[in-house]
Image (cartoon, rainbow, N blue to C red; front, side, top):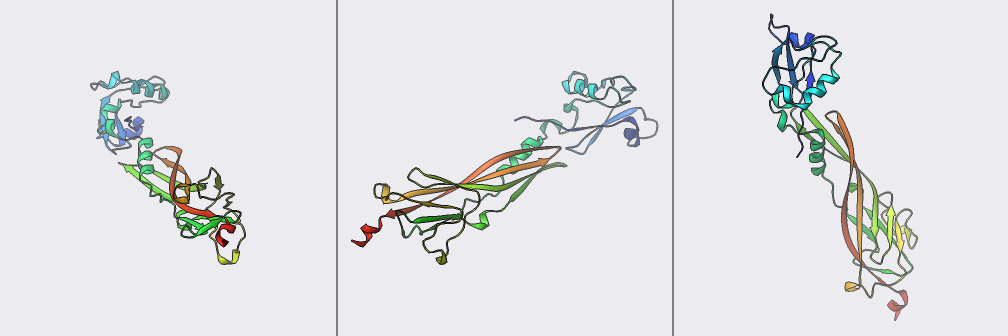
Length: 249
């Protein structure tokens, strides 16, 4: 697992306010993750030149120090320090790791599937089937993960439902679908429906297995970073489909 630390690089004027009188030439490095500050060696840089590396053991060998020196070459008296010199810096999670934790903890429900005709009844070849998922499952969900002073929040929003109807057909609905009401009679669903063209007599248990997969788009932000991801949740049901003439005989 990758680890990184986040540093505040403080100019001398700010750092000096944290120090006792008489130590104004010393520098301080602070960890944004732990909130702790460390007093480093004195006389570490001057205007227009890369700061001298700390004489503290281990500071001069880290690549992070060189990168910091390049960024702060024109700023006087700024401190560059290796991450291992910050208490807890090596073990602090990155924003990406916190985002992954928040995403894994998102309370995304498996969709509650609605069908008309109901699974307990029977559909008919040539007559429309209505499909929908519960409105309660169609709302944004958020989760936050924190470590020290850094927090990352992931927000998931449902975007579409992919219905696999059991005989090879796929129906993509951009919303949750419309629940059937008796007033609709034999009309088609206005936004999410399907019509079977053959019976389910040759299927296992003489029923079509139907699955509904809700796709969620996830946006996360925090710790100075942001990103996106996708997740799905699936539920299934089944429906027997017959022919009208066979029911009359």
